[in-house]
Amino acid sequence: MTKQNVVVSDAEAEIMNMAISVAVSNSSIFTAVAEKPPVGPPGYIPISRKRFLNLKNLDSINGAERINSWVDSMRASSPTHLKSSSFLKEDQSSWILQHPSALDMFEQIIDASKGKQIVMFMDYDGTLSPIVEDPDRAFMSDAMRKTVKKVARCFPTAIVSGRCRDKVYKFVKLAELYYAGSHGMDIKGPAKGSKYKTGSQGVLCQPASEFLPMIDEVYKLLVEKTKSTPGAKVENNKFCLSVHFRCVDEKQWTELALQVRSVLKDYPKLRLTQGRKVLEIRPTIKWDKGKALEFLLESLGYANCTDVFPVYIGDDRTDEDAFKILRERGQGFGILVSKTPKETTATYSLQEPAEVMDFLQRLVEWKRQSIRAHSML
Image (cartoon, rainbow, N blue to C red; front, side, top):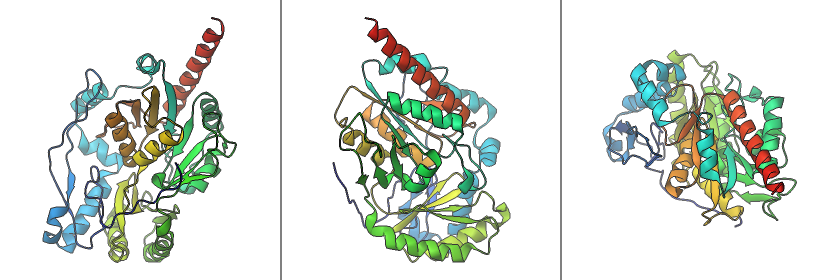
């Protein structure tokens, strides 16, 4: 499979949870809807989706209400707000039952993977590195880098991030991995080649290449527009943009939302979604981390295989697209990295990058023992 270009004229109407669409210059509101719960493992108890974007009512909301909905969504993405208002204490116990620790369930995961090829997919920020105030200092520890290197020796391994692919590579510094930057819109195979698939070097996929001039233009406008808001940082991730507000006083979130809206209202081919203390601006194409996962599996030759076992580990709302794909395929598992209960389609959970490293180390050790045991037969 070679380069792809997939473009649609309208913004995606179904953006999970509190994603915000600016593909139409009019406003949006959130309404409660019923959604079919995902199918999970035995004992799985679904949490219903609470809020969904209703584009049918775009014309009925004025600008002030629109901005209020943006700010409400920004507050909802804050971990402090999630702890205080999203779930009661009794719900936390229920959440753990629904999404048990991948460390506690390690043996069950291994049993489910027997006879299949494990393929590893991991987000970067908040998964392999801690979330930090300055996104330019989200460094990976040496111990984590060594662990990921060992994982890549055992399984095909990909980093799937909202960051610019080149920037993620500078953080990770491992040439043997697959890298999918810009939420999967910029995919490249291992610089050293891959023992799992020949001819995997070079750029595999850049479905949003025609948007590059627009992204650069909007980046400059946003930098200029938001410079009056202390703590705001606009990051150019090549095929998408990030407006970080982790260091912005909450009292100024409304002002920041107004600044972003004033720029994006003139760009109907871009849409806005929500991450962890960040507003993500992306082209309106049918592509996300889930599509990137599917593309990489196909590139590795596992598109229609029943003996593949993809494992995706991520902490952000944008990772939900990949979790959803795994449930739809009925293959592998999604693992959410979070210390607080969140609505997710992931099967299992880990609390922080330290637990991610522990899980990866156990996976490597299991693989090594498996190889040793096989060689003795």
